[in-house]
Length: 292
Image (cartoon, rainbow, N blue to C red):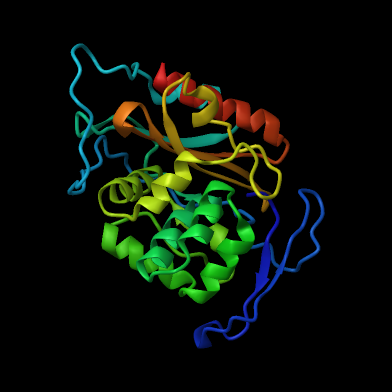
């Protein structure tokens, strides 16, 4: 998501449905509030945890294969160089081994951009909302639908509820209740969300992530990162992008490999002088280094 959807919430606590959603182009805003616009966080980095505890699974894990895992040895220094003057948090969680094989700045806090749509989708489907619209929101990263669901299904309470339920220690709702894209997340927490999606969530969510379109509903190319770097491996993704208050965010997250063996999460921020094309390539280079 770029700097685009805006929604002015009137009487959110009363569950008002009369929201005004305005869409703006990348460089021009026609709304006073940009729902998806990112803000820079100054939260200090917490110490990284090398592993992400697994959640109880109700889906089969990949069949063990002989030999070492395909994830190459990478360190923070190598990945930091790949993002240049940006900053990142990254995890590769191997579901076959039940542990993270790479964990770099995993507790750094970023604004979520569209990744919060995973929590919105979980909430809507849990309350028997329209599955077809949820799938469109995810696969096309549709901001208008996200804004609609945000108002209808509880706004910031969506985030606080799932943060508590899944023990997402670095996830917080946005300071401005209407700015769902400013939800705070960490790479470690996003991995836990995917673990839950694999184990407990309705199949509609994974179906949508496997069907992610090359262009989002705003026209942005969302195949950077995991799709471009997968090298023929199966993938399912939820991407995020936003700008510019004052940083530019580009996130790639999802599942890679046969049997959804790997959960891969790369969260990044860049100065606004780094354009989307350059930032997207850097994110793809990071994922390529992670996957080998």
